[in-house]
Length: 163
Image (tube, rainbow, N blue to C red; front, side, top):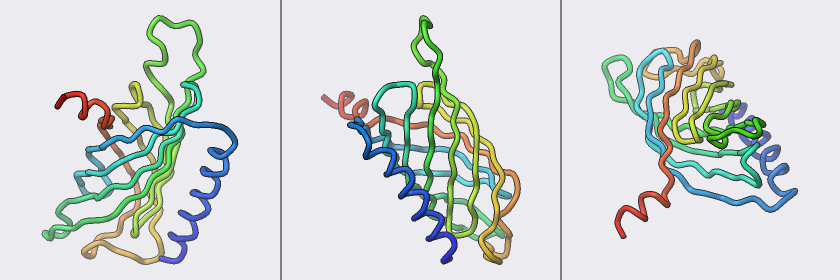
């Protein structure tokens, strides 16, 4: 548990250190998705998107992963940090897709990941999870292939829908 806290603290300091250098715009998003980590989990949470221009975008998020593990319902908290990159210039449809690199961590594992995202709204990522110590979720070890499919909904869209 202590290694997880140290890793998250270091990751947060590094990301926040780069964000302080210039004025960034922040957008709030609600995220829902699916995660496969030796089991299937549904995911609900929120993210903050930071950008100065649309070539490099930073995202920080937190969510709850919910699913049945070992015939018991389980909930795991998840924190994540992503960097979205697209340096393509002179395209008709500005920056429709981004390459995504990041990491996610729970109280059971830490997983670096890579993938793609469409407009920063629909993410498809994959990685490999490394367990934290000998922690298990309902007797099941959380290590190995990690696949995520996430839909990110900006809160501005939700606000405009109900005007």
